[in-house]
Image 1 (tube, rainbow over the protein chains, first blue to last red):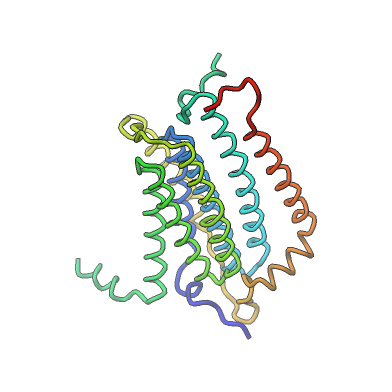
Image 2 (cartoon, rainbow over the protein chains, first blue to last red):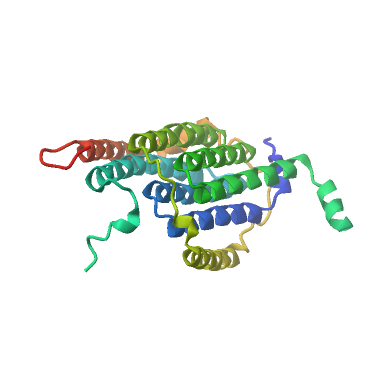
Length: 109
Length: 182
């Protein structure tokens, strides 16, 4: 018979929900306050990780492996997203010699 | 004051580990968005990823802890550092001096946090049945079985996604004639 891990017995699930929420909020604030495109990108990674924490916590507390498979897919999509996004940032830098996103206002009417 | 000391004294090692790792993760996240130098941001973000991996180990999700370190702290962060060094961003950013934006963003973020917490605060597993609890959930054997049986098609589609992403990155990074270059 398998044993319940100590952390699941001693830490209520709401603590993981709070941790993930705070990480997500920090990511959102980072996207709002920074103008450096690379740091905005890192804030997005932070938000993706907050979601991963939440999925893994629920999956572990319910001992259901499907949530962890979803985390696996999220990581794969994040890797692809970073590859394309950084290529776009490099291309922007080649064209306007800066990665300040407040200067990217060509589409403004 | 004394009662807080009693509470701290009564913490078990598992609780110490949980709260310590949570504080480390949040500290790294705050450092990521507050530091002026992008390289420092990357280092703080790596700290966050390692403490999150430790959380995964505590939750008995060993496979994802290893994948998190390999994919995030390894591959993705190396890409970030590579691009930052490639772009050679010498000047320190000054955008953190804009106080209005900082205050508005913090207020908006805490509002959203209140909404999220108030909607999720009833999240609790009703009861844990030691008979039906499977502690091997996060091991590679269980996850492999689920991944190759229930999620075989998404798994194959992810490889197509990677192929497209690779082609897209190569196409975006290629120099074209007539484009302004270094």
